[in-house]
Amino acid sequence: MKQEMNNTHTSIPGKRLSAAAVHITTIYTFVLLLKLVYFDSQIGNNGLEMPYVFATLGSLLILTSISLLLRPKAAIGYMKILNILLTFMVFSNVMFYRYFKDLLSIPLLTQLGSVGDVGNSLFELLHYSDLLLAADFILLPILHKAIKRKAIHEESTRSIRWMAVSICAIGIIMGLSSFSLLIKSQPTILQTFYDRVYVAQNIGLLNYHTADIYAFVQQSLEENGALDFQKKQEMLEFFKTKKQMDDSDRQMFGVGKGKNLIVIQLEAFQQFVMNKSVNGKEITPHLNKLADSGIYFNNYYYETAGGGTSDAEFAANVSMFPMKVGAVYIRKPGNYYYSLPIKLKEAGYSTIAMHGYKPGFWNRSVVYKNIGFDEFYSKSNLEENELLGMGISDKDFFGQAAEKLKAQKQPFHAFLITLSSHFPYDNDKSKYSSFDVGEYKDTLLGNYMEAVHYTDEALGHFIEELQRSGMLDDTVLVIYGDHHGIPKDNEEELAGFLGVESLSSMEWQLLQKVPMIIKVPGADSRIENIVGGSVDLMPTVLNILGIDASNQPSLGRDLLNSQEGLVTLRNGSFVTQDMVYSSNENIGYDIETGEELPIVQYNDKKREAERLLDYSDTMIRFDLVDEIKDYLEKERR
Ligand code: GP9
Ligand code: MN
Image 1 (cartoon, rainbow, N blue to C red):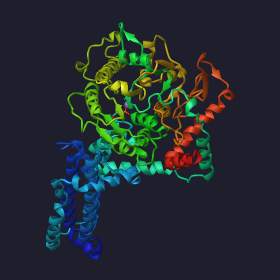
Image 2 (cartoon, protein in one colour):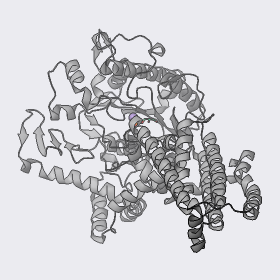
Image 3 (cartoon, rainbow, N blue to C red):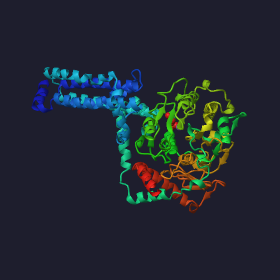
């Protein structure tokens, strides 16, 4: 029998497989695993992270099993190429991580601008230990020779094939299980890729790139087609005719001229907690005081989508809408955006952003640079005096922010994003000062109220410090919430707190307001009732700072100088002063009566909301902001 099998082999020598291929495959798999583990050690992991090693080995087994099917020479060739490619992949990601504290992705590579910066600083980014990535290029050729010279022990073709298939299958099972563990812990992470480093740490670098490529191809297929000339003209016309009042006719134009601008985005901060007490104690006393002493927009909604906090930042700083699918910060980080910090830099401001979490989260380090923040202080270059929940506690964060701002070149634009009141609000309460939520204790709503109370207190300290240092008199302060805090699943709890049995879909929408306060030194306090949302922040602030916005392709409106507002939500729903349209139900409700309205009454508004979203999408997809800005400059000259 044995004789027969050998005969079969000799009859098809070209297909003969050898133990040499097994040796080569094993050695290279091991070398590549070491390189990929080196990568892991460079992205903030200290020891051997088991999920990472497991997932990485899985993906390597899939790739290297192929070489078992090749003859020794071809196997060596295949592994050499694989080694070069993977070494390059590890090296470039390590460099990119050192620069941006983030990983490479196809959306980034296709928008090369920011990636190029890494190349320019390559020498500063290199560490001696990186030489380890090249060590095998000297050692392995010696090994190749030894393997080739050695008498090759022939194995049966079939058994090696089985070996290859089984190894590949084991690799697939390992890979799939790491994907499923990741999705279990972070269900939407592979749709938005809000934390690429986390993805790679859990499914391995190779699987991360595979998932990234897959998402990119899938999204690109949905985006096929060129820009219609007619459509572009229509858009240019829209921006041209967007009403622009004379400066002198505008309310509050330039009342904050030359002042510093501090914009504070509060995590998951809804408006319903404002001016409410639990057990006789206000939930947000400091915010309430600010609302009383500043301009309080009490009808302000978040307009975010899948990109959560990053969408809120984008809408506020760029006055455009988030993308329908995924996060614009992740998918289109390199477009040109004529942002608030860019505008203010043109007016001589210095710009700084601060957030007490990983700099690569939501791609911030790349995006901030692109939208004009000269400096970005994050968890990696702030002190970690006190950690709470996801990152630096809001009190610690605001304390450090106050110090940094004292040294900042004036006038400055500072963008501060809080963190401690992040879902699921299960922070270590020993770090809170006491706030008795009574019957709500240990419920999600109760924990939420404790968390926002804590953030409010931290904010209060910050304002006090600004006051003490005299900076408040030279500063326009803008404070708003980024998005919802209470998920739909906890609707009943919220209804109970508000003293109603249940909430209709219209009432739920009306509860999706966030605080929005602008405090201008010397200006009278007032309540602004106009409906508005995230995209309206920039035009409103530019007016107050007295900065010309006539070349601004913004999709929001200046809330102090508009007859009426429109809150456009990403799913096509919208809110006006008197009505709510729910796109899911295709029903428009009268806010006062709660009754359904005939479509003729709001069809125009519906079309307007759709048009705004469509223009925003088109501007993002074809990177049109610069062109529109140029056009507006020419037209308004
Ligand atoms: C993390 C923080 C949270 O940096 O901004 O983002 P979110 O989960 O709220 O979108
Ligand atoms: Mn958030």
